[in-house]
Amino acid sequence: MHDEQHYTADSRAGGRGRLFVPVPFDPDQVWAPKPVHHVTGTLNGRGIRAVIVEHEGQRGFLLGPAWLRCGPEPGTRVNVALTPEGPQRADLAEDLAAALEASPAAGAFFDALAQFYRRAYLRWIDATKNRPEVRAQRIAEVVRLLEAGIKQRPGT
Image (cartoon, rainbow, N blue to C red; front, side, top):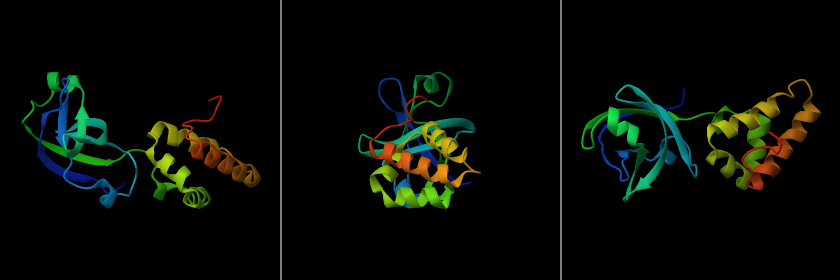
């Protein structure tokens, strides 16, 4: 598992019926630099998925109105555990990692994708395990699509 971060924080109102939970660390330093950090974990023992954002000058994540109906009140101290969601660069096969490293635009776009899109690309590439020539072609195609800012393969 990736470097799971545990901490307590004071939640607060996040506007528009949402709950804001501060994140007291820099995810770029703790995990890896990425344009967007999708995370998974727990808040007071309940599962969450979120995106770390800047809100009113502070780094944290917002949870929807349902959390205010059945979860902690704004201003409540909460226990949080967070880890990066989905496959990360360190989890990738060497050939794909090298291709993303060689194309900073493709790598940055891959890093910013939600896990659903990252996993779909990885499944398509991994379906070629017994055909290395096809694998290389698919990796090149994925890099081209990512460079173009395309979240998923056309036709999927």
